[in-house]
Image (tube, rainbow, N blue to C red; front, side):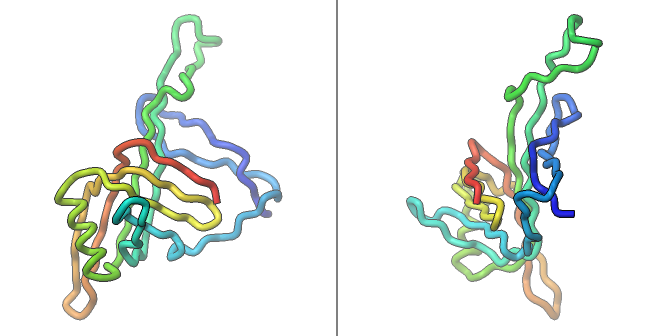
Length: 166
């Protein structure tokens, strides 16, 4: 059965980050399965110029929104009430792979050591584009004796993240 997205399921955790989840029903607005390698991670190199920085082999994008508990003694049936739109939003990105070239390696290293928010763009085909300031919160390098050098990166949102639907 093909499914379509009809809305966001509310979080059940109070005052803690909770991943946004999508609820699916029906057969309308079908979305085909996505290849992981089609998700692009880019960094702004100059005013409005973005460069794909790495050949990521595995990626995770997490969107989170904290809930704010507004329950009081007058809450109907003593059920918890949440204050919509009041919680802190955040986004996190992680990935592992190989660097495309020395220039992209240098851009990521520079972003890590400066610990200044850089503008990143994440493109997920048939879903949309996330863009905004992120800090490189973790950067790891590894390598096997008979293999290529690899890296792992984690980005944490550092401001408002914009979303444009595909």
